[in-house]
Length: 362
Image (tube, rainbow, N blue to C red; front, side):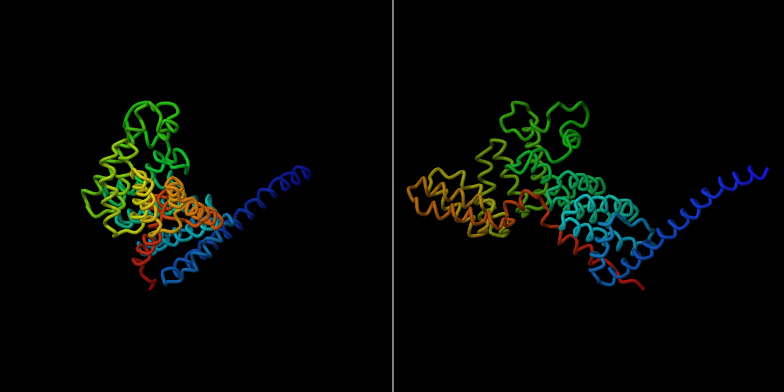
């Protein structure tokens, strides 16, 4: 009997220890929630360093899972998480940043539709700003589910698709094939090797042409909402050129270059128009116009070098080529690079707009 009692006690002890350990772990889990609430309050009061501290905590493997009380506090938590994610992106903690954004979407879904739309759009811009068009596309699609036809979301989603069909050496299909296929054919089996067929301009399959036509319609829709949307017109010109509709493309690109309202769009427009020039001298002038707006445009320096060499100016061609090589040492993010990051450069403004709506805690 004594032996059975000892054995019974011995069996109970590990269970008791596990129970105590679980209780201790649960207590420890409550501590980060309290700390997180304090970070949210600090952030609402204007302390942006709270985002840095949250980024460090998430980088160590912790994700905020605590509840928030009321719309104002929950919205502040969502914006805090988004800024912390942006800091994680800056330090190339991409997976941690994506986890934080994904975890925050559950919180955002319970907020007002206006706030949720703006947050989804901003989160998509953040992903795009680091070349992650796939996640950006999904967030823009979610925003469009809330506000179908919204021009800002339409433009952002179209830029994510454009980066796949006109990669310009920046990669292949960056958006999930199933997402692209749903736009081309809402029902039906997608073909094999869709990625290659979309990015390959020499493909005889119709899918690339279909996606380019879809993008042209999207950019025209944006322009129907706002005829002054310079970036939509610029991108329409590039899509029309890729589609082989050169005369229409040139009209759109020259309109962007002549407007001068958006230096970013004007630089890219001049860069693209140089390919339409019939003479080396005309191309060189277009490349110089692009460089006047953005001196860091490596493709413009390279094109200028080739144009000058073709026109017999070997000394000028060598000087332009040396500029290309010097830019390669510092690798500045030119307008050409930002163009292929879609609307990512708009994230700081979108984040600031979200922060401006926050109210201090009482």
